[in-house]
Length: 130
Image 1 (spheres, helix red, strand yellow):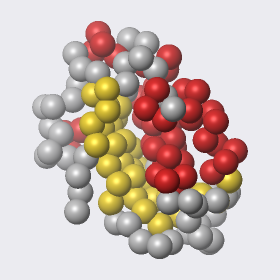
Image 2 (cartoon, one colour):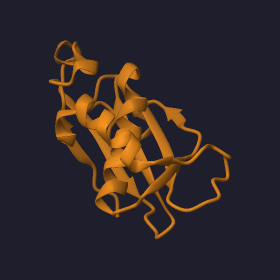
Image 3 (cartoon, one colour):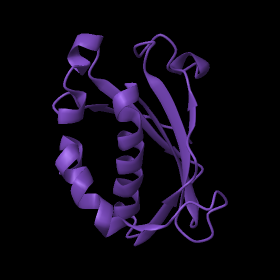
């Protein structure tokens, strides 16, 4: 079941100008969850969407006590392509969708990283991670 998690993140340094864009809500969703993978979707300004998706995947993996993670190649689209968000976020924002693999192999052959290595950087970047 898809239930978006709306986050107010304008305090993050990476999003210094998001209040001027008309909203401070970034969107993240988790779906297609299994013991070996889950999908993550992030909707944010182009300059922040990749970091948001990676950090939300790391956050979720950390909550599940996962030690290693790898991410698929991201797929990008426009918010208007997702009816639930069309007209609800600024039109210049971007949607990034990816799969987080908790076990090997990653079909895209992307490297595996440790959650513990990535988590401190995410904590320092995003107020919601602290």
